[in-house]
Amino acid sequence: MQKFILLDRDGVINHDSDNYIRSTDEWHPISGSLEAIALLNQHGYKVIVITNQSGLARGYYNEATLAEIHKKMHQLTAAKGGEIDAVFYCPHGPNDNCACRKPKPGLLQQFAKANNISLTDIYFVGDKLSDIQAAIAAGAKPMLVKTVRERNLLKNNPDINCPIFEDLYDAAKFIISEK
Image (cartoon, rainbow, N blue to C red; front, side, top):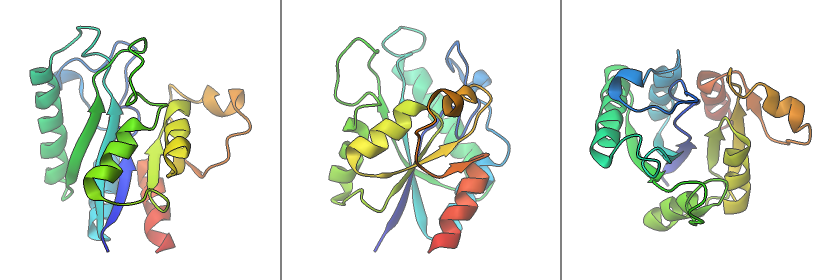
């Protein structure tokens, strides 16, 4: 049986920005994140990225630029011995009322349908409340990584009840120790 791990992109794999990641020059991996993906792969996990990309709807970048950013992410991950199997992204803005923009579960459901699987035993690692909410709504297992931008998340949401890690590498070590 195939094993999957779902990851948010910005703030989990790469450094996030209040101004959005608009080019390949602005996409920088978080220390240890690409090695974490490789570690997960070495333990039989397929890694899938689930990401909101409202910068498309806002006109900050286009589909071609997003494809180049993801190409860089794939190449740098491969250089560390890892592989990202697929990227599911929502191109809509916050006011578009789509089903795929986290915290709605649409992207996770698209992944599950495409792979004909249940999300019940699949971790979704995110750094924002919307990631946790999307995981719960889709029936997946949420995990949280702390980021500089989201340190107040836990203070402002003391009722969050999911595993919390310093970064993706720590989360990956936990995941592989469970199986």
